[in-house]
Image (cartoon, rainbow, N blue to C red; front, side, top):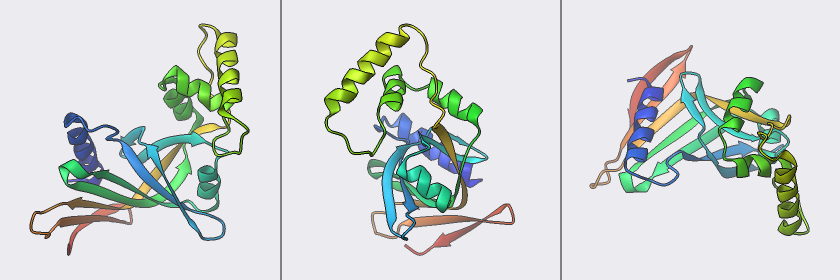
Length: 190
């Protein structure tokens, strides 16, 4: 089985099991000084080209991705006894995809993307809430436009490891590694 298809099947099973935030993944980047940086992001799309999430393009994670596109991501579903580790290269996807994914976000998330500079120091959340309400009133029933500095990022994987828990601690670890565009499968010791 292709690892993207297997990841898609595992995600579907996590959603069918009713797991909250089944598409949440830990994303690790590297700062300019070589320090690792990790945070949770939401999977927005999975297809044969890779794994897509969205972000403000001026954010710390976006700056780190531009400086060093090598990333790692982990999905973890403890109640299913499964996790998936992904390694690859990240790149900003096309504007059309960013606008499509932005349009699919809840309106409150769209408005927040306009008024909050994620990660920047602020005096209070109250001022941001006031600005959010003001922008919502200004727009009325009109759709919230996608900010120019907001985008979709695609991780093109070159390694995907599937881990399945075993009661006897002999966990199943299946590694798919891409070489010259082809996936090669191997088993790893637990």
